[in-house]
Amino acid sequence: MDKAIRIDRHGGPEVMQWLDVGVGAPGPGEARLRHTAVGLNYIDTYQRSGLYPLKLPSGLGSEAAGVIEALGPGVEDLAVGDRVAYAGSAPGAYAQARVMPAARLVKLPRGITDRDAAAVLLKGMTAHYLVRQTWPLKRGDIALVHAAAGGVGSVLVPWARHLGATVIGTAGSDDKVQRALAAGCHHAINYRAKDFVAEVRRLTGGRGVDVVYDAVGKDTFMGSLDCLRPRGLMVSYGNASGKPPPIEPLLLSEKGSLFLTRPTLAHYTASRADLLAAAKALFGVIRAGAVRVEIGQTYRLEDAAQAHRDLEARKTTGTTLLLP
Image 1 (tube, rainbow, N blue to C red):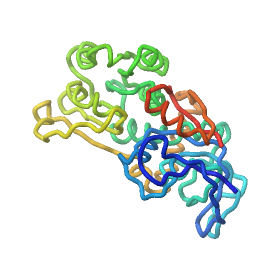
Image 2 (image 1 turned 180 degrees about the horizontal axis):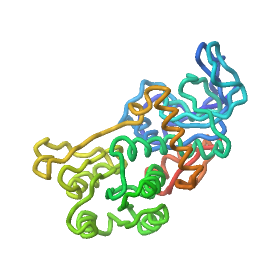
Image 3 (image 1 turned 60 degrees about the vertical axis):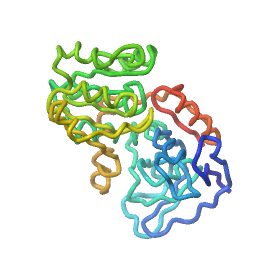
């Protein structure tokens, strides 16, 4: 009998249970895979806590890599034994094995390991839509990246620099500031020790930045608006410190006719064509050496509750893997 993490109520990490589960045969258009590595992402904590409510009981986790064990009827572009990964799927990746819609699986190319894929696919495809679609960065742009030493930040920062942008990062400790600089930030600010708005204005000669990528939420949201140049874009894509405060639309006008968006990966990879294009772009910058996959820490899958505690306490750096 295979095992998986399940929850039957929302709450803290203590609601996560390590249970026996049955994994059936794949149906039409499906594949059963044996997980080799599972990615940990902040959205997992939002779903566990109820910030993003799930239909209960439920699994957790939306990113993993593994090997296909069986295929259902009608699957033509995958084969038993293929190494594959997925990201942004329905919760349930915290499991030793799983049946998945084959259309959501990405075949891993040579040179991309299972652990690399599980560590980077969701974060990397998120970085892809942020820097290539939500605000297509170009040479000469200035971007402010909050949580620059975090999971998405560790991919977004070098990718943005690779595209020719000047990257200003923030982080919550001096150690993470150094990690942000090592990831590729031209400048990095400890936003807990310094006024990041004043620092950004100083670094840009009072101009402000073209775009802010904000995964922190409540603690940085309002200040981020003050870092933008007129007609700049505020991209709020996470809530690590809590949900941002509600604002009046008129405020965007008063601060310089600003733009505000709240994107999600699901809408940028809804079609298989978009999914494959995003994964191809990500694997391309990794294989070119522009983006490096750095796994900060690993936990046993059955210890996922401790991984959640450490993530929410800001004790982790970079990407985290859960190993079945």
